Length: 590
Image 1 (cartoon, rainbow, N blue to C red):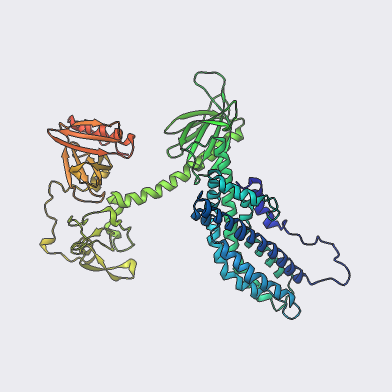
Image 2 (image 1 turned 60 degrees about the vertical axis):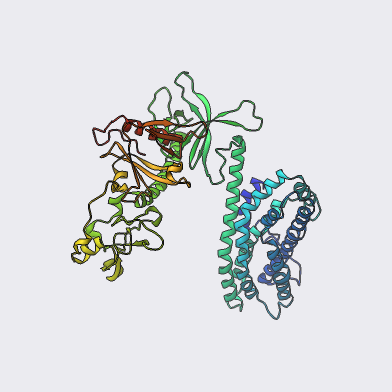
């Protein structure tokens, strides 16, 4: 892997110009050889471009081609892996070797007649799109390189042989692969200095400034790639210290804080040395290993940040102590100082706030699509005044007004522009002016049409009497003892084992209603649970449970064992004839 020290210093070097080999201030180049400042910068650009093209040649014509030949001859690793690692390096090499470097050389040779490079850089700018593909692929390329270096001996032998050659300069392939990522920020630094050194009336002033603006946006992507690589390197080192446990290794995680703490024990009088790793989604409570061979820490508990709480403890015996309470475990911890305790609590709370903010956004989307009708359906006085949140098509299988099922040919989905409901063509065959759309006529459902226009619909549009299955899942979800998606297993449900939205309503606690989607107004199956026998789990899959009575057998599968347990409890209560007494009595819904 790329050296973390190298990565962490890379951005500083790029921004400070420490990588450059220009003359130090005050150095006298000699009598009669004084060049204009802007020309010396162009000369430096040319020299660094030559070195860059040499690195591109090494990447494309040596590393890339040698690995391709080895893949074709030995079949020890796929050619596609090699192509993915090097991305579009061949195109980048050809552009710089055949166009940009020769163009720079010609311009510098003819500097007296044409003292400008802004126009040349502007020609380069459109081709910088090639770098976007390389930078986007860089993270994946680094992962593939690390994986196949460990996985394939022939792959590793080719790379090691080339790295030991004089052309490689004792640098690793990873270092060479960073060159294209670094190159655009270097263009930006040189061009910025070039613009500053140009005389005010120089003919290249306007072109050079325009070229600098074009380079600037491309440089931002390269800097972001370096930052991402540094983050992944830090994360990988943390995972190595933790023993690379499969359930915690996730490249999308972000390490927020780590450090030693003391664990206050209920049994012992003296606190114990422990170590915490706080990520954006979890807190790892670890024990330092006495013999640190491989992993340095053993993970004792993982506490999800979602649902976690943190607060200060007022304990005279253990000052600077705080409580971390999560779904998996509650810990009483002691910091070494008040400042450290505050720092840990702030870091934990920031992670909690971020998770809650994301969950609120998710819940808002789910409520809008899975059953919060009072939130979803605009208040009548707001109809037409602001654009509604549309119910997603996949969340309903039948018209939300007439409750007739949709199909691809005869009954297609439409959206009411006033309330956002998914309705059929017959129920939305009306137009009304909506103020949020500059009073233009829009398609609306008959409910909204009646309210917005005051026109009374014919009697055949009146709500017909509900059938036994017409108990809206929206109401059931809001006022349910238990509701969630369950997989419907067995021939009784069909060969495809579909997923159903299952609800035990609070106002009908002895019946299970199964809907095709959360927003449906009619269940496709209702099962009176009284007298049924509930069987939980099998050795093949513990998430499965069954309802059985007099030859009737229904099989369900929950997403987790915890969800299965809640369903089994709810169904066993219903099967025994239990009914809730209060508004919150017996609520098992999540």
